[in-house]
Image (cartoon, rainbow, N blue to C red; front, side, top):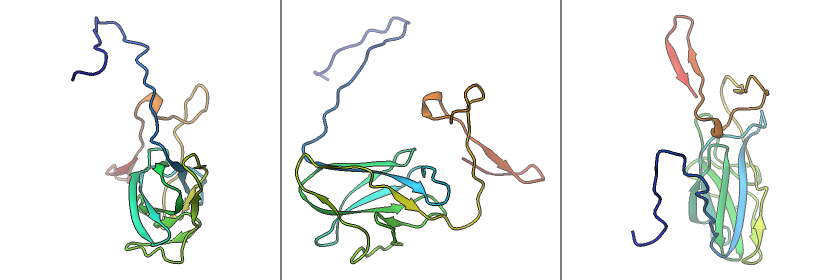
Length: 171
């Protein structure tokens, strides 16, 4: 309440309201959830960071809408990453390619990610998730450029109906 800069809105857009964020000191692990069949990002999921030496669950973070996850502020050590609460139809998976359904015992499974120093950034730690079942797969694209629609253009969705016009679901 006593910090920051007050903004006065006068009916016009307030531009240049930028923020510089500083990551906490420590190492980082960065990756993405990817559908193993399509190569497309998997939207959302809960990521669990595990201290490998004792297989103890350490910290959790949600994956973003484009499947990205990021752990920061890590002390040097050995870690494993588990895509634990994944969207329906996908199997929980450890980085390194091992399925690990709940309750997951990561002992002897997954690939260890080593953080050597406070400045170590381990990126590209992508987890490829297997889908079980049948699905409809596609993209929403812009008619003018053919580029995929993303969050900067607002919300877009697709609804699925059966032959009788009854709504089955959407995404």
